[in-house]
Image (cartoon, rainbow, N blue to C red; front, side):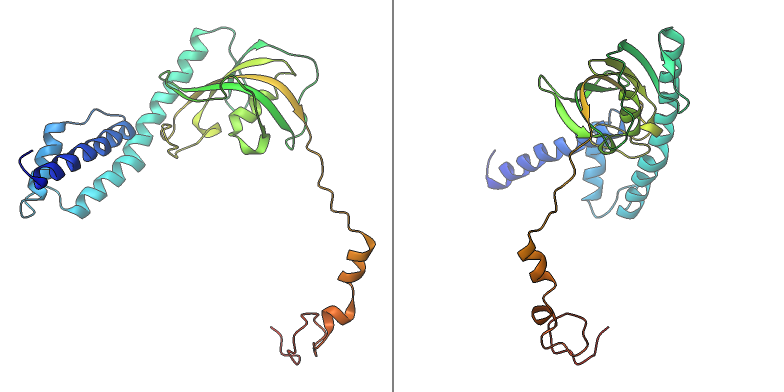
Length: 239
C-alpha cells in the first residue's frame, strides 16, 4: 500500500468480501464476483449501474421472499420423498414427520406438552451440513420451546430411546430463514431422550405479616378520595 487511503480502501474491500460471501451463502448460490465488482464500479461512477438502489432492493426482496423459498420447497419435497423411498424402516406420522426409531426406550411416554426433556441431539440440513448439536453434554428445555417436528418426534420414544427425524419445513421453521437454515428447508435430526418430567410449580406463599400489610387500608387508601387504593390525592379523578 502506497499510503493510508490505499490501506483503508483495501481493508474495506476485504470486509466487503465477507459480506458478499454471506449473501451468496444465504442465497444458496455461487455469486459471480466479476459482476459484483463491475456493479460496484458502475454504482460509484455517477450512477451508471443497470439497477438503481430501489431496483436492487426490490430484486433482492423478490429473490429472498419468492424465488428462494419456492426453490427450497421443491428441493425439500424431493429430499423427503427420496428418504421414504430409500429406507423401508422410515415411518410417517399424519403430520408428515418421517422417523426411524433406533432404540425404543422404556414403555413410559411423554403425555404432556408442558413437560421438560433432557436430550442429546444433532441436527443437519438436507445437504448434510450440521447446524446444531448438544455436544457431549445433555441439554434441557421445554417441549413448547422447540420446533413442532422435534417435539412430536421425542414423544414417539421412551426414556433411553433414540430416534432419527426427517422434519418437513412446516414442522420446522417454515418459510423463515434462521441463521444457516434457509426458508422451506427440511431438516434431519438424531435425538436421544435421556429424561422427561413436569416442572415443579412456583411457590407463591406469603407469610401472615405480608398478607396483612397488603390489605392495610390506611397504607393503600390513605389520602385517596376515590377509594381506588392508589394512595394519591386524586380527588376521585380516575381514568
